[in-house]
View 1: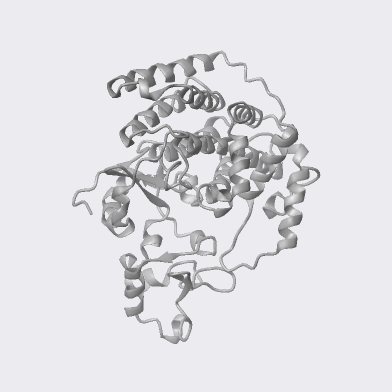
View 2: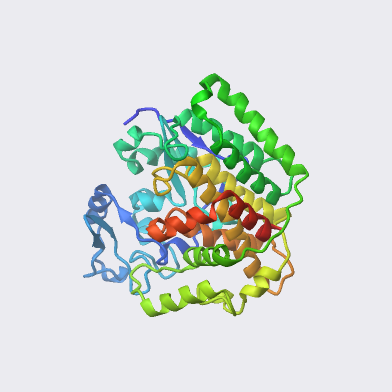
Length: 418
């Protein structure tokens, strides 16, 4: 392991976070895997006092060859107290908690000889941009990085750019900067920027990178970013409703992103099958993915003409910029996908987020998407993106591939983003 670790905190100027103690992450949404060091440390702690409510209860459960923190019947962490706070933290201090708990909502993304920092938006404080700028967490994160990352993280080979086209970690960093330039061009509305990024993915796919020397890459990327941005200025964003297999596939992906999974919850195959069929049909009200959306109809979501603007657009921009800059959207951090495949999947979260934001607006009796709707939608989408094993099964990989083809993805971005 390296003695000195370059830690990239991005985007420092846009994203903030501080824990508010809401306990949302401790209430059954995550299985908390622990390291051998975590287990040894907790084993040495005293948890047999009757007043703590843990006497005689197992503190861990096995998950294959690994251990995770035990949970209650409702899925919540066994160490969660009645006030929604951590008993380990209260009794022994924050350093005594498992690494996973101390790190959340941050993630470490090894990128060649450096580590980039990602932030999860399923945390309410992250989604609402509550707290200090994330750069101010650098010192605390540096203390965790060696505990959280295995030694082999430093020897990861760079994934492909797309297909069998190879690229270096340095090239990926330069390509990422080009996409950031497009995303952050505030002369364009957010939907035009995302559509331009879809076009840039397609442009890069058409280039023979073997004919571009390393010293020529920055100029090429600058010209490519400028080209798609200039074209976006006059883009009429023609809205065409998704139909047929594209529409059905999008609704089924919505179902994967919208599902609520609790730790320890027993699967209900009949209920899941019913939900899947209703998502496929796309008629009537949205099935029980989210109780708060039970009175929202598919037709109403499609009828609502609204774009993310102002604070709602800024929230979604923060989300896209954070995951883009952290380079968490491809490789080992995202189902070992190639760079452009993972980036296209990240851009697909834009219409997914807009769909859920519309649904929350309708549920609240609003005529458009506001900041709160966007934040709720981001929490839903990011809880599954790159995390749920469902998105890596063959059928979902095929479905994702179809939805991220340029014409289909661009159509979804425009339809749900304008």
